[in-house]
Length: 232
Image (spheres, rainbow, N blue to C red):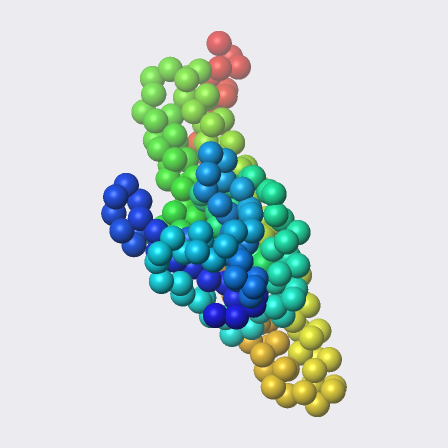
């Protein structure tokens, strides 16, 4: 472990050991900045012992990331924050943002629990209930709830898509500058980051396109209902 590392320990949940990872940023002086769970979850600087709670500490490795001083500065800039959210702003979202600038949680994604995957199954259920409901007014209410879900998912995804595009362009410029300076190794690393961000942007774009398709289908399917309600 070293200053600026993203570290994690395995924590228990409901008495089951090793169920999830709790992440923090190693400050290199025996302290860790992390989302400390008390009455209110808050980003705090605590001792390594309090962070680890007797468990082994692991390091999350990256091919490229911010320099340690920058990582620490980013972590310190958010000390005192109490905006914890399991699906959009948990301890891993925070530390990954400190290391790479990306607000994401790999373990949530691996569990199929990222914000968009949570919202869309609920939307599908609302649509099915709207179709099956015999009351036009109730069906319209359910359709509007589904549209609200889609709008919420879009508001989450669009800034991430724009950020990914911006990072792709930034790393492209870094690669060109490195090549001009004859720094081939740095150029390769920058191009690797560019490709990663390009793939991330493409994934976000694919999800946004799906949401647009779903929204258009929803509006089209609800047209007969709107006509029935307006004529009654």
